[in-house]
Image 1 (cartoon, rainbow, N blue to C red):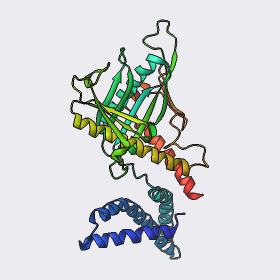
Image 2 (image 1 turned 60 degrees about the vertical axis):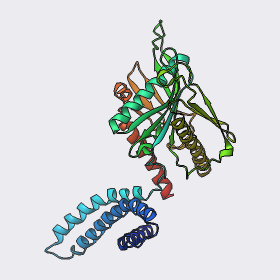
Image 3 (image 1 turned 90 degrees about the vertical axis):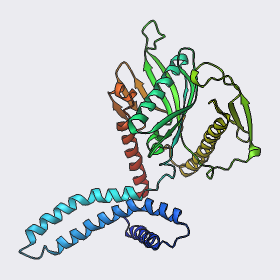
Image 4 (image 1 turned 30 degrees about the vertical axis):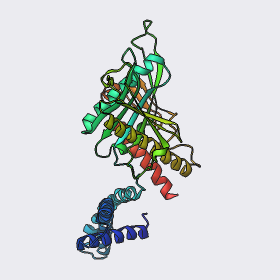
Length: 350
């Protein structure tokens, strides 16, 4: 049963915001409007739930009327069948929201164990996310990429813009394992390789304060294999965050733009570190979490000979690997979100 006092508190706050905004006499209109927009779907779910409760009470009151008893009993049964789903919807709406869910994301992909095959697989993952972003109507922009001589990926950093990007992609962080016969293998043997994916919420300047004294900025000429980012002027930028040792580079044609990109990636990494610390503190007594677990953990296996993708966190296996590699990730992402919600609901009820 959803706690009534909690529902009253949210409804009261929503009605206050609605009345306050209606007057137009608001000093912090942006902040109150944002809070109102966040509370509205919750308030709507509560209103729908309470409407069902009242309808059931009205139907139950008619059970003593001989002329209405049969119809009332049918109505009570119908509403009672709808209430569990309505209650679950309210419970989900009450779950604490990740403040970063609606933000754009930074995706970093690097090869793990497996040499050149791991680098080729990292490239496959990059294309998988690019196709998924295209299908979702998101904007996918590669901001730093280093390739191997055979066309694999040494490292790639991309920015993804769109609605709910981080909320949908945050479960992709971790080690992705591939089992297949590499194109470089002449004997037809199946190899196991891996690549790591990190998905970070894009941070704003107000989230992370980086004093100028904490960073060192170097300009240099882009070089190395991997193409379109190589240039012949000293426009590439490398920013070193001295306290943490984090180094970020950007190699676009504009030095000003490179500073902006590199600072954005640096902010995202520092913001993510702070979020990870907070997650670890909150989850110190729990073994694992789907949404913010250990990024060194193997989360998924892509088995090409069997056409199988398995997500180990939720024991989900799909025999549609071709579609998955083409960016069809919604089924697994939806399952991960649902599992995360179930875990949070269980914690809420404890």
